[in-house]
Image 1 (spheres, protein in one colour):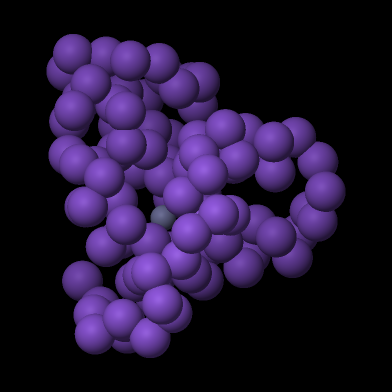
Image 2 (image 1 turned 90 degrees about the vertical axis):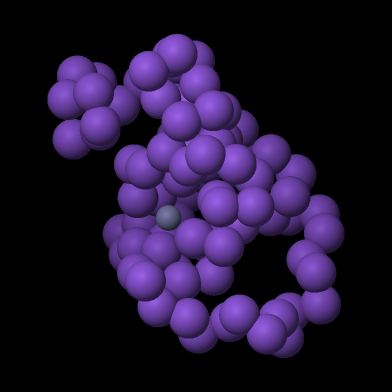
Length: 90
Ligand SMILES: [Zn+2]
């Protein structure tokens, strides 16, 4: 499932980009930096994945893990909404 092929438990690992600090739980992917992660979060595949997760299970542990993984960046501050890179695909 994850890059390590083990469990979906998130741990800091020196083999991962940025030690696995920037992890998209929805997509089970690691990113090298906050910027890379944020850029990824604007892509269609990610948004679709999020929708699927939210639609399937509105309120459960996934949400909690989600919040933990994303930090406050997703809830608190959004950089405007109409970013120039929006809609960009891979
Ligand atoms: Zn994602």
